[in-house]
Length: 277
Image (tube, rainbow, N blue to C red; front, side, top):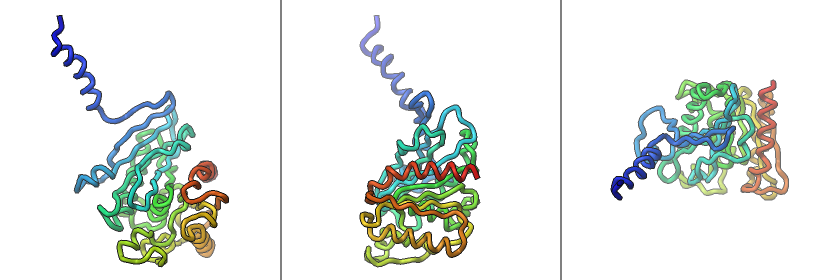
């Protein structure tokens, strides 16, 4: 007869082994999510880096040569979590939702360095998961849109990982700053309503050979401080340098937080068009 202690061991041991396994789960017959993949090229320097510099990777099962969206969350470079947007599931594409270190634990340019490391990891590793490294798009909302543009427009960040911005299929920032981000300005004691365009501004890096880019904002009357106008000016400058594939969509009736929901179909349509070219 089993004793209470032996019975407890028989129940608890399998449970302990289960929790020791890598975090990977099939969430349906068609899709798989692998959580907590470190994208760091070296050992983390502290617990914040160890915790934040990870990717949650959604894979479309039974697909080969699929496109991938590297997704950066919003939160003003101060908050947010790397969740996989529900609107991108079940579309035959992969989603790599990447975390990054946050203010006040770090300051610029660490946010951009982390974002570039995440993108580089996807470009290097998505083929082993069944994806096409030539179909990697970068997207994000708000602060994530800012990081999208910085990684895709200023070549130095990906070059640190021996990756070129020309290897990216496209950029889709949702309501991102095109001037220097307000958190980075605050780190220097610059007021929120004092616009700066320096090396930490996507506008500073306008050139004709950045990847195809789809800018999306909310309604200009409902957005954060002149966010639509920032993006409109970036589009104007891209047109001035003869960029061949730059667009801007304004989502009327939607504010900064609401605009992400109706932006996802535009993202998917843009990806399909770029891939067909």
